[in-house]
Length: 358
Image (tube, rainbow, N blue to C red; front, side, top):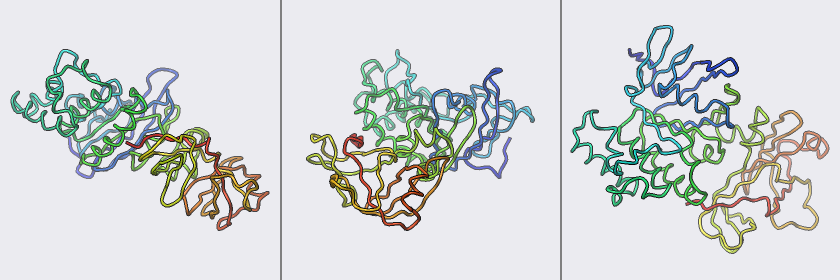
């Protein structure tokens, strides 16, 4: 059944798995948009994926994709998982171990408008797109973790889905592989025309890959907005503590990182090239005058915005680096801070987390 006024993914539903757990979700993803569902373990992210994919039936509400209603208990509508035109990339790949890489990618296309020869030819083009065309005849066990995840992504894309679901796609990878695949994944997502839903517990993945972030806690949506919205004005302790990191991209050389013309001193002298630098807003010390001792990472800036959350306050700082600092509300009052205040800030090099951006 088609509802012509709906586009992309619309998912407004609730379900109860047992007496102690229920999930209520309300999200909308337009074609070409990436939305991240961010939350701690046990928040309900996997349940949400299962419901959208059709592995769990919802109790109330409705799920629709590209105008087609997939699940609506009140109207006795339920579309089987294999008929939903959804591509799913799982954290543990779920590749068929007895099949070659090419056969794994072609699997979802056979019987979906392609004969075996056509499916294999199409699979080859997707393997080439993810840089694995020379490994088509290998078995999954012969590949690295990053290569297996690329195969899983190629398989999901090759089925030409209307929606792409990514369930913790980078969590099973080591740090170096994760950084490399994250950039590639960003490129693949930007080329996928349909809506994309990324499920993760890693704020950096959500901030880097998503256009919008929905925070899920204890089965309920507690906040939604851009990365800056959540960094600056967190509505829960989880959002403040976990999703509050500043994230900068720069070029490292000789123990320093240049970010937009500004230089930060970092603890890793041997790191070089494109890097990501992250640190919590509470690591940014705020002063009304230049601090004594002249810490190396010290500069003058201005407060653009102040948002209060319980006993904490988030300060949005502008040039030379747009950052968020976190102080107590008592400090705001004690220092006489206000929007437009000129301040000095400092960040210890040991507070900076640096990782390769590629």
